[in-house]
Length: 153
Picture 1 (cartoon, helix red, strand yellow):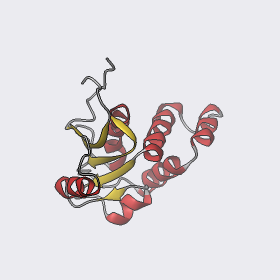
Picture 2 (cartoon, one colour; picture 1 turned 180 degrees about the horizontal axis):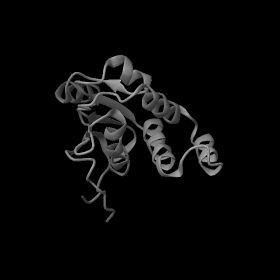
Picture 3 (cartoon, helix red, strand yellow; picture 1 turned 90 degrees about the horizontal axis):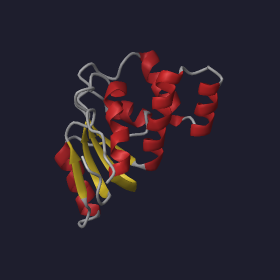
Picture 4 (tube, one colour; picture 1 turned 135 degrees about the vertical axis):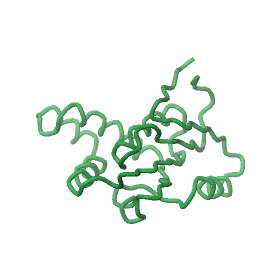
């Protein structure tokens, strides 16, 4: 998908990697080159297997909230595996750069907030709220964010 004018709102599907909240988050970095800093990412992630185990949720939350320089230092020291840690480092940038609004039937409001995400009951309600705040918002829709690769012209 060619990258053109940056969007104020990106509606992003997590498909096909959307079993848990961690797997669904694989789609989020795709929204960065498509959105303005501070833009809303309305993230549709079914998470049919729920939020993951307690240990997975704690590790995910801790890496999302860790300052990026600390996380990178932990990766370099070998305290965090490079394979997952580098992805978590990229994901942390998304969460710090943009406002992520999660739409999921299987993730509770408390669980979403634990990770720093806003929540909405539906994509339409989230989009309506964004357009009410900014009627001139430029919106981009990426239905399969887990497979999309932005291409710069």
